[in-house]
Structures are given as structure tokens and as C-alpha cells.
Amino acid sequence: VRVVQSRGSRGFQLAAATATSLSFPASQIFTNCENFPREFSIRNEYIFSLVQEEGDRLLLGLRVSKERVNFLVGDGRRLSFRSIRLADGQWHTLILAVSGRYATLTIDCGLPVDLVLDQPVLSSFSTRRSRFYVGSRRRWKDRFSGLLRQLVLLPGSDATPRLCPASKPRLAELSVPEVLMTAPVLSDQQPSVFMHGPQRLDYVEDYQDVLTTSETFDVEWVDGRFQLYQNISTKEARAWKHFTLDGQVFLVVANSREAGSELSIIYRWSVVRRRFLWYQSLTTHSALDWEFFTIHNHSFLALFEVNQTLATSGAYDWEFFSIGPYHFLAVANTFDGHTTAITSTIYVWVDSHFIPFQHISTDGATDWEMFQIGDRYFLAVANSQRVLRQGPSLYSLNSTIYELNRLTHTFIRFQDLLTHSAVDWEFFKVGDERFLVVANSHDGSAYALNSVIYRWQGYEGFVPVHSLPTFGCRDWEFFSADSSSYLVYSSATSRLSKVFRLKTY
Image (cartoon, rainbow, N blue to C red; front, side, top):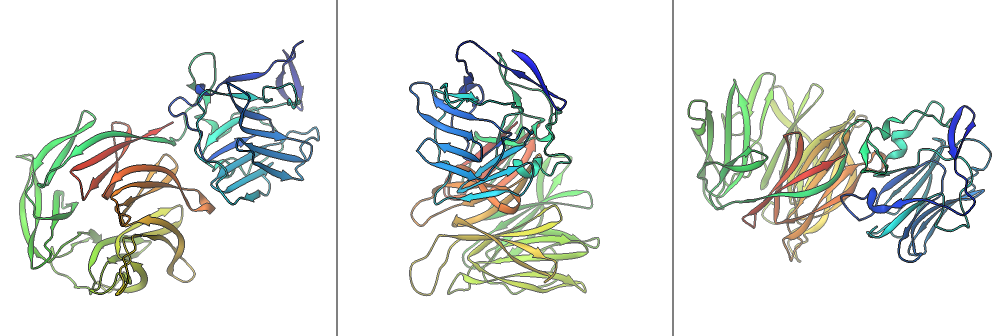
């Protein structure tokens, strides 16, 4: 081993009389899951391979030639990026990002080169009993020769925008890039973290089962678990809403009946008795949701004190949001008595009341979710089913994300996502990452379905990253407690609801 220097940067050169290889068991970096990620990013010029320990079957490999970069997959496929010249005696930064059917190669933070395939680049395969080789494929042939530094495998396909642009992309920096602040360091012992940075979602674990009965109840977070706290009698309750008004804490429940009127109840928190107590009864008709909001120091709750009535068609959800000085209220219209293919309406607050702002075609809309990413504003609608005057109902259909266009002052279609009788969206953040999780409830034949977590990937929109087993999923809620983040879902067809814990790194 000797130290070599090139353009002010130092590295180690390995030499031996007999053929040697730099390798380590794959289990050293796949400590929590033995499945290779379907999306990943690779940085810097190198040859890397993943080979089965028994036999010589190549699972993955990256090979750099004089004018070509090849990514090799174990099923015999080869992704070739042509006219890529790296053997010029200069330092280069190479980033390969893989996601679904797309593979993107970026050299020195320049223009990316994309390859689009007919099928996903990687399907799920196990890294069990395999070994990583750096600079070789366990053979003397095709060994890498040159200087190599900062070989990093990052989960997710978003390494390119996080590493680029750089002030001097062609210069190999000795300092650790910001994106690698939480990367594990391999040693003779267990992997360790050498610096701290924003948390990133690694995987989701099944954390707790919550059994419910026909009687609604409150649960309390105690010692890292939910425990029964208070029973509250309800009648076919469909939704709860928590809000604070003048320093007091309230809970309102939407009691629902298929025909006739019903009393929905507002409860107020008693500091003395440490319980929610009856505060006010409100006459409602098949209530499905409540929405509390404040405009110009005036607080509103549907029917708390009647301020305005709005024509709806089987309204299932209200979503209030503000953009700058403007205040909006979106209603999810589900059914007009004949079909679910109707329009849902966004209202805007003008002169102390709401007026229609935009009508959007929906299919059995059950939920609106508004969220902001940077200076961009989005609205996601959950479409539950398509019921027409004739023909069978369709449960597997697209739910749509809309983005506010500042030129036309309207929400325009941004992305369609295939869902299965979707009834809820939940937007949440983990570190610097943004996510959407959908509640898939029914596909026309079964309630046991995977609900999906999507991650924001910039120009790619939202891409699926995790599938969570659910049964008749009705609602998702994200919360943080005890320095951890969680997702909890409620089931409309089973007594079993679940809490999932989000594992980060």
C-alpha cells in the first residue's frame, strides 16, 4: 500500500504479488433488510459488482470502459450509456440514478442522460449470501485501474439534484459532501455514523395493533404505546375533528344515519375532570366530516353557528386552506343520486362569504389534501369509485394531484396515481423529504390491499417507495412522539387498526 497524489488530492494505491480483491459481505450494509433497493443512486467513477458468494452469478454490476458506462443486471440485461469519455486523466463525478423504468447518468453535474426501458430496471431480489466487490467482479479480468474515491450507494433516486450543481464539479473534493453526512462507514466492527444530518426514511415497521369495538373511544400515548383513555358513545360515527378556540380544546364527532336527521356532538375538554364532556348538540343529516378554520380572527365550524349554506352532492369531505391572503374551501362531492362522475368545487372567500372558484371533475371524491412544497401548492383528490347509470362499478381508478398555476390562477392536473377505492390522503415530512400515503380500501373483490407511500422526487413527481398491508383502510394519520415518527390507520371493515413506525437513518 502506498500513498499517491494527483492534483492536490491523495489516495491509496493497493499492490500485491498475487491477485487480490477488495470486498466485504453484503450483510454488512443490508443490516435491516436483505432486499436490494429498487431505487438507488451511485456516485463516482468506479467498477462495482454484487456477486453471489456460492457460485459466480452476477447480481448487479457497473463497468466503465473508454467510451461507455454499462450497468449490468443479473437477468442478463445491460444498460449502456454510450459516448461517455472518462479515461482522460482527469477527476470526474459520476452519478447513476435508477427509478422504475428510468436510469439517469450525470457526469460532472452536466446534462443528464436518460434511458427508458419497457420494464422496471430492478425488480425485488435478495442480497442474501452475496458479496460486494469494489474494483472487480471477483476475477482478475476487468479489474479497475485508476484513482477512486467516495464510492457511495444511496437509497432513493434523488442523489443528482442533491449533489449538483457544484461550484467545481470536475474537482474531487476531500471534504465530505452534505448529502453523505449520514452515510454509514464500513469498518471491521459494526457500521457507524460519523456525522449527523437530516433524517431520511429507511423502512416502515409494524409497531402496534389497536383493537376497536362498535363503541368509539379515545386512546392515550403512554410509554410508547396507545392505551384506552376514555369511552365516548357515538352513533355510526364517521369522523372526528379536534380544534382549539379561545384557549379551550374541543372535539366534534360526525354522527351519521342513512336516512333522517341525527345529533352530532361537540365535546369540550375539562381541565378539572381531565375528560371530554358534552358541550353542544347539533342536528345533522348523514354527516361525514367536520372542518374547522379561521379567517380574519373569525372561527368557523360547519353548523356550529350557521353562517352560509353551500349546495353539494353527497359531500364527503371539506378541506380549508390559505394561499397568501386568499382563503379556500374545497368540497369532495361523491354521488348525485345517479352517478359518481360529477364535479367537486373549490370555493374562495370574498366579501365575508364563499363563492365558487373552480369546478373539478371527480369520481366519487372522498377526500381533498392540500400541501405545499417550496413555493408550489398542490391539491390531491381521492377518487373512490366510478358508478354510472349503467354498467358495473369501477374501484381501481386514478386519483389526481393538482397544482396551482399562478398564470391561469387555477389548479391544473399535475399527476395521476392508480388507487383502489381511495378514501384518504395524508401528506407528511421526514427530515427534508416529503411523502403522500393513500388509503386503499377496496378493489371490487377484496379489502386486504396494500396502501402505498409515495415520495416526492421533483420533476418525477411522486413515486411509490413503500407498500403497507391494510384491511379496509379508511384513514391515515401521521404523528411524532418520543423522537420517532408514526403512521396509524383505521379500518372501516375490521376491528383491527394498526400503528406503523417510520425507521430513519
